Structures are given as C-alpha cells and as structure tokens.
Image (cartoon, rainbow, N blue to C red; front, side, top):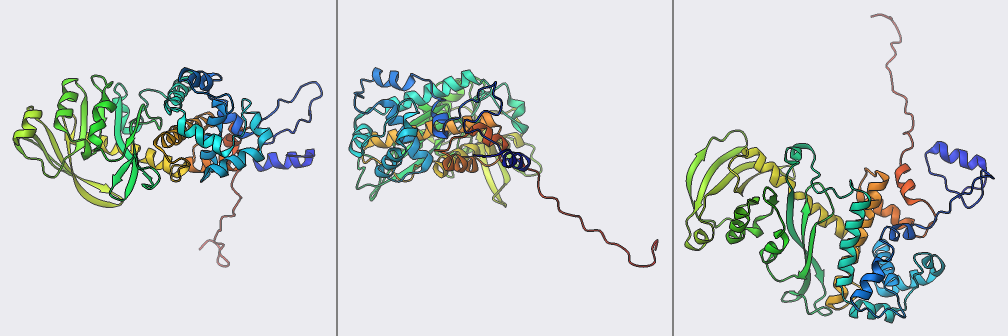
Length: 430
C-alpha cells in the first residue's frame, strides 16, 4: 500500500508493482477493486461447477456448503496446514475475507472432518477434471495436447506420454484400509503425463500394495495409433506390451535383469551405443505373451554426473538408437511432476483418518496444483515453481493482483558493478 506519490514513484523505479487502496488517481475514472489472492485462485474454477457436482452426487451441504469445503481444503494446501484445527482457525480469523470467495464460510472442526469422511471423493475428482477441461478451453495454449520442445519437436505429430506411480505414506494406525508393508500404510497415485506439460491426462488413486503394472491398462486405454509410451521397468508386462503393439502404439521401457531372449539381428553401434539388436523372447511364459520380435538397445548414459550402462526395449525398429535413449530420458518429467506435488502441497500430513478423506486431500491437492500452474501460465513465470508457490503462500490473504505481481516480480535491473581495469602507471604505450 502506498500513501503518497513519492513512495509510489520510488516503488515503480525499483521495479515493484503498485496497487491502489481505493483512492482515485483520476477523478473521472473508477479504480477497479483488487481482491485477495485466495479469491483470485478459486475464481478460476467455473462458478457453479462445485455446487452442481455436489448436488449430482447427493451431497447434503445445507450447514456447510460444498464450496466452503473446497475452499478450506485449497487453503490448507496453500498454507501447508498440518491439521484440521490449523485450517479452521485460519479460516475463522479471516472470516470476512473468506466470505468474499463465493460466500464461503469457515466450518467447525467436527463439521469439516465429517465432510471429509462422508462426502464422496468422486466430487473432488470430477471438479478437478472439469476445471482442467475448462481452463484448456479458455486458454488453448495452457494444456496443448502435443506440446514438445527441443529434441522431441520432431515428434510433434505424435502424443508422447510417460506413466508412473508415486507412493504417498500414511499412518497404519490411522488408515488401515491402505496397507503397504507389515508396519506401514500408503496410497499410490498412478498418473499418465503428456511430455512437455505438467498437467496429467489420467490420474488414479488406489491402495499402495498392488503392483504398478496392474494399472497399466487403465492408464493407456485411450492411447491412439502412433502415440509413444515411456515407462520404467515396473511396467515390463509382455502381454500389456503386446496389446499396445497391436494398437500401433510405440513404447520405450527399460529391460528387466532376468529377461531371457535370443538375438535375431545385430545392427551397427557406435559412440555411446554399446549394442543395437533385434531379439525374441525364449522363456515359455513370456514368449507366449509376446511372440513377435522387438528391439534391444544398450547404451552408456549419464545419471547425476556418473556414466552408467542402461538397456532399453522398444517395438520401433526405424528410430536411431540415440533417439530411443533420448525418448527414455524424457520420461524423467513425470518424476519431476511427482516431486513438485510433494514439495509444494500438503501431501505429507493428512488431516483425515479414513480412505475417503485421503482421496479428498489428494484430489484437492491436484486441483490446487492445476490452479497454481494456470497462474504461472498467465503471468509468464519463468523461475522455479516452488518459488511461485512460496509467493502465493505469503500473499494468500493480501489484496493484490497476484498475476501482475508474478509478472513483475524480480524484474528490477541488477545493481551496477564497476568493471575493474588495469591502468599502467608508467611507460605508457609499452
């Protein structure tokens, strides 16, 4: 807030955005009101989507509206609140500002807990998917279906997708319905991510114990001919890979150590490529699942500054061996996506102690992540995503234009530092 023109001028020179408190700089022109950051984030959700979805699922929201439920969960993710009481106290202390977010009201602790426990989590899942579709229609460049850059630009006519899962640790004493180990509980988030975008196209949340490959068909069922699938060795299920190849979907995965095969043809290898072969499975079980030949590429790759030997499998025989390696490298984006979720949202401490509450927190976390990425898109933010989240967290109740703040943040020119020059003290010219 600025109280006089001198401070306003100095702030503009320093590169900081200036926001009005309601005073008119031009008496003939009204100054638009700027609301707090939380309202600006929630306003990106279609206006009647939450209430309409809740009504469709038969949610009884007479005392605690579905919008209030969503807003408090989003607030918990933005502030990284560790318990129900912390969210309720924050909302209650800012009751007046919270009411500006579509008439949301702070719920009591028991009311909030009951909503997480009894309201179907499919409401949050549907709101997330519809919001992603809506933002894609409003801003077509936000979620393009085939956005690839650099080396992968040669595949711009194909969809390149990475699939993987991440384990979300839970307390076995509280959530026994998600067993993972003998003394641990966990949920698993399975996702399919278009390479070049941090907005997943398919998400499934299940118990942590079943193997990743059990969800492979569900994650890839709508992939089209010509698409490319990238996955780690957990998804080396040859019946699954055979079905993909039958649909003309290309795949690139890492080889399992115990794979039995015979070499049918050897191709020329050079540089970091150790071998490039056409192979056929020889074990009775796997050969029956995948009777065709496929390609095996062994190469030296650099991982965290160290050179390692990795072996890749693919059903495409026309790509260069280096292309196969580069495609698998692009799979790392889904690892970054999972890391980004866990570092910036509240997915470490869960505010509910049953399966439904866990799903509510994960789905609203994905919704918050989507809205934050939309702020990043609107503002043209080109710095670390964690820094953007930190700014939003600090300004969650501040009345400022968050998009303009992110657009101008850090744009001040660096301080002038004189460059030292050696001056010859005597015998000039020599």
